[in-house]
Amino acid sequence: MSLKIKQTISILLLTLLVFTPFLQFNRAEAVGIIPLNRLAEMEKLLYGSVSEKPILERVDDLEKTVYSSVQSGSVVKRSERLIDDLLSTTEDSTSLLFLFNTIEWSIMGELSGGNLIERLDNLEEMVSGEQNEGPLKARIEKLYNLTIKGQEMPVEKVESRTNQLIRIELLEKINSNTARRGEKVAYQVIEDIKVNKTLIIPKGTRGQLEVTKIEEAGKMGKDGDIKIGFPSLETIDGSDLAVAIQEEAQAENKSQKLAIGASVLGTALLGLPGVVAGYFVEGKDEEIPAGSEMYIQVTESKELYGVIVK
Image 1 (cartoon, rainbow, N blue to C red):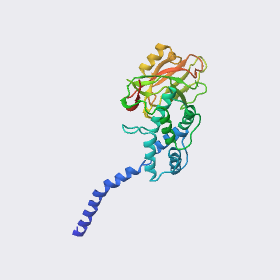
Image 2: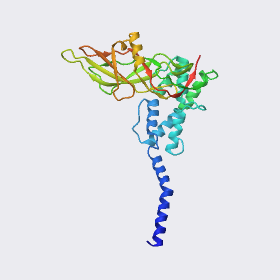
Image 3: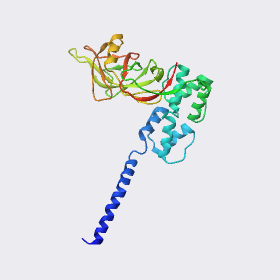
Image 4: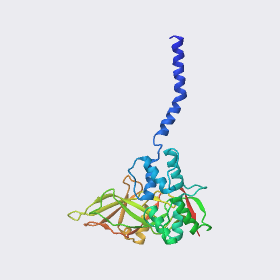
């Protein structure tokens, strides 16, 4: 092999050694660099549904809602700015979602239903008699100044307690004859959940259970069978917290003879987050009525932010 060929090979090898990590880094950065899941999360929070528009238009719409105008910069930077302002709470900065949840809870003693814009409209009418105009950020900050500014409501980072019980109420009925697998059913938390004196899940917080299995009652006395699972529940700072019906919650349901708890005969893991509970009645279709109460429980230890309350 000639010296020239050896030199050429050496240069190629050196080039690969120098630039391959850089190319791999850029490839990794390019995959999923636009936080589509977080964009969808913000849209659902603000409007109640996820937009099907092109990404750039979705970011434009979010900025118009939050800031009243389209911001400068790349779509990635603009998305990150929206996430920081709307969803991200740190030791130095409180998100708009956390701030609004705190204001609403301090006034009403609970969180209300609906998307964030609807909730803000209703709270402004309650406080000042009219809905304000302008960017969401300015409206929430104005409401804060009118209501709780100056009150000592410090933010604190705490760790959730595994097995902490949460009492909930179904907002819709479930019937084994009409429900479908994968159907989402709304519920609300009916008591404040705290870690020591720090509020992490306010009363009124909405969640959804998921129907994981449905069997209609059949002939010859076959039972109707509903199985349900619990995706995560959102805390006051917007964090997702894993919940389920497990041993402690099931024992509390049975001991208090709650409407659903009295008929929970067992639990089974069906591959979804959390443990699902079977609900049975002999020989007929089963309905879990709206207003039924039950206990679920926290199933993970996770650091999150809450509000210290007396």
